[in-house]
Length: 477
Image: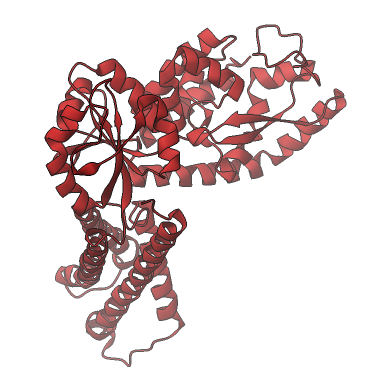
């Protein structure tokens, strides 16, 4: 049985809307109780008891508070996947956010209140915090229970493919079934990784093919999860398999014995007995959302501030007899193709004989193009790519499909690059620079893989500082 993707997405949107609606109400309620407490307890100590007015000031405060609350919930990833997530982790993050949000709200809006004693401060923020805390706790527990019931009853399920040897899978099949009932995993079949025992598993789980058929099987059955159970001493096979599964954008789980093969190579956490999850996302939700917010702010700011420079460069490029802009297809996150924007630095038809990389003293580069490349000014239009969402400020540089295929053939691990958005600048660019051939591209890629495995806001700042220094020194090509 194959899940209806449109129906599932509709359910996701419905639950997300429910969460947002109730969180908005909780924000309004928290401000209302705070407003009432200040007007009936705090302010009478100074001004005497007055009639409480539900005026425009109250409405504005309630709206601002609620939208800030929704924004904060979204930033930490609490609306990302309302059906498919750990209820305990979600509840923990939501409660932590209640405390942090209340503290910041107090420091920004309530600290300057006139109070009779310092205990009034604690009472004020306490009213606000308790309202958020109780409201958030009740909604998360209630909605989590309702969603879990739908999962257990089979209303929501996730087509799951078992991958491994018959022996390894049958040793764990009972535990896997118990886990599947609780987490919604529906076993649609298994892929054999050995040349023996080519028959159905216990409980009549059918064999669907061999490892070479993985991509076709995942697409045909709309697979969401893959559970890997390879025998010991299968490191080379497991590494290749993980790369294939990452490219298919599925959740990857492994039997603990299998994980021992790759100990230390990936961050993991327990997803439930007896599985361990292979994490595809290198950043936490709040870091990922902060990075995207940073991208939007910086790209908007740069497009506005540099607009006079854009006009000047456009005139200079046009005077050289070339079109102002150059667009080219590149591969982005999850290998989705997009058009990258640059100021033209080469003569028209510079690649009549086929795709070529830039080399030192390249005769295809125009005189004005040499200057633009030296200071990497030709990359400025890519702020538009960042704003649209094709790219990030910091991330591995995007390559053309022609060269990406060549790189993957020689270095399959290059596919890890597609876990993240490509960037305007990268660790590989500042530490290695431009590449003139595929071998140099592979060498530069090592720096980008290191960046991906250690992605953080701090490291993005570090790459940006290196980039500014590189630009000032004119180390472009």
